Image 1: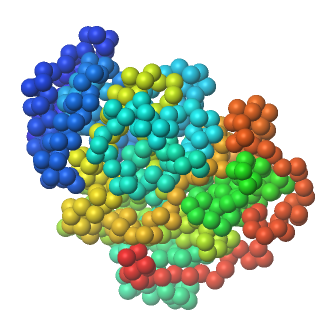
Image 2: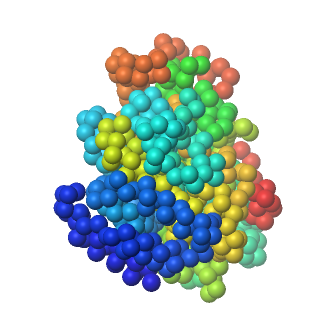
Image 3: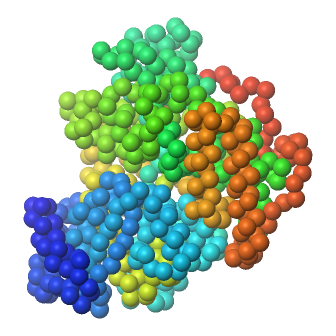
Length: 577
């Protein structure tokens, strides 16, 4: 039946998607009501936090609020993941048929999304009417003030198109999209964490466990620290299991924007590079950027009090490179984020220290039969990622992506209003449970607690347990220390790529990275575009001065490979409950 709904809606889109707004063919009130009824009956059903009557009331509000914008054609954009594919292919056509607003939801690479956003910021020309971009840009949006802060928008000119059933407290990620000024700048659309993924069936196999204990002297289990992860990676690499040669780790290393996220997505803080503090280290964050008491970035290199090229950062990069080159499939070095994500589902990977839960959808479908039992239950599990030698209690433990709807001030008000309606539709309580089953990226508490996920939890390898646990709040996106995400992010993948390819040593690559970051900070300081919130660089001092201060940057440890620690998965799971 979904096909029928989408086809019906697509006829409307096809009739006018290439035409000007005044040529847009809008369905009659009766036809739109029928489209809404068909959508709720055939696509949503009981996969909603709302009753059928509540669903209808919410959809009725969207139809009424959209009336002034019928015939308008708008364009929005997001990265290409399963959640957004469902929005683009199913929800966008349904919204078009129900409201008469023709929405084109483009899917492009995340790096391209950031590039388009940056171009719109620099040119002040409207490229897209709304963006789903990561909350990692919160420091950028707060400082530049080029996006509509949604707090004022909903109370002011966007009030007439703000749903009375939006229910912001039900969203689990609004802390990530709120600036230090207390204003909400973005509305979460999807969230996923990076966790540790492993083959539970292998880790609990008596023969494999005995072999590991004999080789390493301790029990095979979920690694708590990087020393244990490395032992496990070494143990499994080259081992024959069920007639195939397996690898002890999986990662990716292509010189591509996604390689930058691999590191800025909290890898350095997981190693222990930054300061104590949650959701982000202060004064030094997971990018190694230091801020002062006024939240002004003051340095990235150790000589200015930053930590991007500190011993802990060098350790983090060196470990990544070693595990990629020695314990991952040879092809991994040439892969991007999206190419590497589905590989564990092929059945030859024992564990992955840095695994995004957005790939859970790849782990539960027909293409993942190699890692599923005949009844569809998983041979794998997910758990917290182990931490590095420099990590200490109270530090950030991992990253959580929060792709969020963002309205630029350069978008004309009427187009922003139409786009805001669409953003609320695809995050509404009416559709969110069904959308979450498609993409497995949770944004609402009501969705996480829905009975359908209680039923499905045993087949999702710990995902539901994680999101129902208070522990989930310890995984967080990039914080507000980063003043210009688009400019700074592109420096990471280029320099990390030099190290992963062997062109430079880890120290050389990070020295270059921190110096380049500081050049950007210097330009922002000179330009003054961010006012009192912009960078104000520290004077350089000796590295020894900063390394001898409490906290980050931290002096090199005498032993970067402490005693390995593992834990039984079922024991660990109790800490999530």
